[in-house]
Length: 141
Image (cartoon, rainbow, N blue to C red):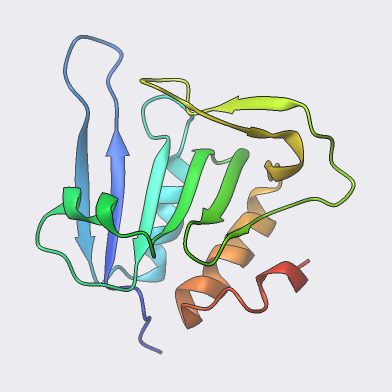
């Protein structure tokens, strides 16, 4: 089955003085996406974006408000989408603030929006990868 995802961006930060950079993967296979998610570490690899649009320049994906955002680390990430106002949420989670993405400006969210189960995160991301839809993501266990 061909995915609806046309572009994936992986953002990389360095622990020395080098500036951040990114890798653009066009028409990523699921194995590419899963590998990118599993390498996320909250500092050097804190951001993966999946887009339904095809881009020639990875920085252009940052302007895609329709991109699926994965922020944090493999074992502690936030999944969200700007336009559809969707984000992963644990209804039993608490509202205290958590910092994900420790390099650069970081990303802050409520504890209830942090997913700490990599396998569940991958199931949710795979459902989006296959469909490009947010419709059934909340029902994934």
